Image (cartoon, rainbow, N blue to C red; front, side, top):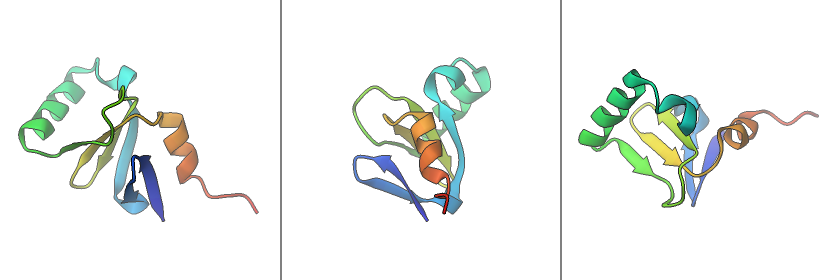
Length: 81
């Protein structure tokens, strides 16, 4: 399955390591250091130029998306039959 991150960007669900709320994790020193490292090494991809709401950490890339964490998490849940 694939996860739609917005603006025609999709990633395989099995590559997603974590989905984080921008407001909650950017205050953490370790996350700031990690994002700075990723930025310096060209591993950050901005899905949209709109206000970022979530950070999606994948195996090779960190995506910054304007789609909320809750919406992304709902998209990963399997439909009930």
